[in-house]
Amino acid sequence: MTPLLSTLAALCTVAACSHPRPAAPRVGYVTLLGNDTVAAESFVRTGNHLEGDILVRVPGTVHFHYVVDAAGDGSLSRSVLDMHPLGAPNMAERRVTLERVQDSVRIIVDSGGKTRTFTHAVDRAAIPTFMTGFDESFGLYESMGLWDLAMTRVPSSANDTMTVLGISVASGRATLRRFLRRAPTAVDVDYFGMAWNHVTLDSAGQIAAVDARETTEQTRTLRSDGVDVMALAKAFAKRDRDGHSLGSASPTVTMQAKLGGSPIVVVYGSPRRRGRDVLGNVVPYDRVWRTGANAATILSSDKNLVIGGTAVPAGTYTLWTLPTKSGVQLIVNQQKGQWGTDYNARQDLARIPMKATTAASPLENFTIAIDGQGNTGELRIAWDTFVWTVPIEVK
Image (cartoon, rainbow, N blue to C red; front, side, top):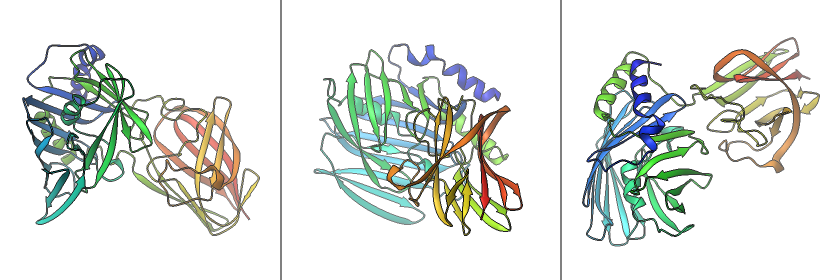
């Protein structure tokens, strides 16, 4: 771990981030993906005025500065967010402005000399929030300052809900998010209808931590009031320039192999281990796994295949796996072109047992490979210390 990340780890100990503390003029948060810092934020809230800074490191360092003003009743009056790419290639600076217009929010995106405007109807009491992720990780981070403001509006009774408008900084598109009160110090925030972010509040009602490991982003956000976002932004931007950028959280890999002279192609998202125990944690037991990240993993062949003794006609399929403590199955599915969380068991072509072994040392990058000679070979799926294999043959 680098000295900078060691410093962050020290800032974000459980004791520092979960124990109630007196209100501070500036509130800070650090977001971790495994051992890697992927986002940070600090903000100050004075009455109906909120101002803060956000750092996001995926795919490269981007700094955001936002100013939010609320009306006398606490509802949004005007919000402005400025985006400054410091170490992210091929990104232009932009400004996103939110304005209350009666029972709607007007979203104005200014970037590269072009202006786009969107209008979304929303309850007047709702607090729109900013989503600051990009590409496949567009749900990576939302402003804790605005979430903290929204928490003051969530009904206090258990299982009561409030709807919030999440605005993507990258696209300007809006997504309705549900805040659900579980207990006095627990609120769940809906993750695009697929899972929940679990928010823990301190005794003063401020956010102490957010556990998003149930979602596809797999992050944890911890309160750390000593965060200097601008210093971190400069340090991480320098790492980007020196060739040490985090890049995409799960880069897309195209694996091409040949058996019997016939090409077989597998396209998958490759997540990183980042210090985590994967099997039974990041990859849960007894649940169909997307077998990679982002879009569903694709297998294509223009020849008929036999995988683990099961005939797979020429064509394009998606690959999934079902790991258990006693073994693992490869699932060949006929649905394709969907996101990796959209699994439809009715489209299964076959479920095929795989051989499970343990690697001698942990593998950082998730990989899928096909090796062999002549018409026969082996399909191998590996990450951390697990290795799953199955025979594959071209007919």
